[in-house]
Image 1: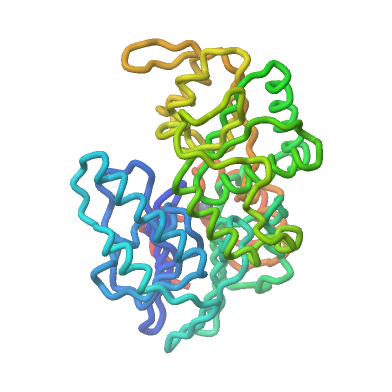
Image 2: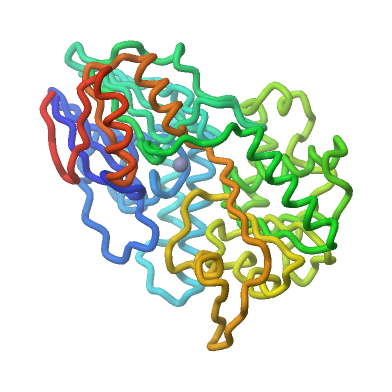
Length: 419
Ligand SMILES: [Zn+2]
């Protein structure tokens, strides 16, 4: 059996791993790298392409397969949200006046090529999808072939969050021959989630007391719904006072509808509610002009580099009464939000705006941190472990911690190993 590490290697973005044995060849994920202009060509001759979850760094290259009659395998919500995100990508490209090769029909072809399955058998391979706890519908992928077992984690999380149950090590295959594991936070130990949510509410309360605005840039898929639900519940239970709270993102609004339809994917608490993502204290708006200040606004883009979040950042960042909460662990270095945080100012069409608002990074992540990554490797005891989906320093830090449990490799991009 051969494993080729095609993308998302020693970096986050563009995930794709090929597994080939006795004539069967599958891809695990088929993702894009954010902002990449001329991506490397990925092979297209797969018997099946298995998608772990709907983030575009795992699924965004699927359009390249739209004319090749692919077999795409993944969960139902992953299919639906991936299609929404691909359609959105096509729309943004045409709005920006770029000549983009793909059309809506191509995104629809991908949707139709999708096999919603938890198990699939190829002549010489059997494949199972197991809960990964990272975002709604996220799966790990287990492959059995030639008497060996491979487990690919995709992005995963062991701890429960407000809306999603974490992956359980005891439900995963023990002693796989090969574990291919993400290492995004391989060198990072996070504070307990409880402390982070307390810090979030404290920051919001502080801002409410001075009647300021709170801007929370968030991704349209999952992080936006999770944050809205968290704040909605905090107001309902009296942890936060009543305040104007809004979400602004047509895409996030469409995705929220899927969350209501697929409520069985979430925690017992969420499933009990009739339409859990119809919030009581959070309103959906279509335009920033509809905001009644002071307000808490959850909006896209998640990095604060476009859309409503960029617009509000420029409008609110010069006022010390306001707060900006960075929800993501990573910000592109050239994003205006990162520049505001690092330099204390940002420029807008040549005008310099001084960043007086409090900018706090409170990362309520859906990824395993180093402690959880070690817990997974200790629990599974794989023979060989390959670290992917992480910068080299993060992968190396994790490698030091687990090399006593498993043979650890940090593959190079495009490297092929024989198992
Ligand atoms: Zn992800």
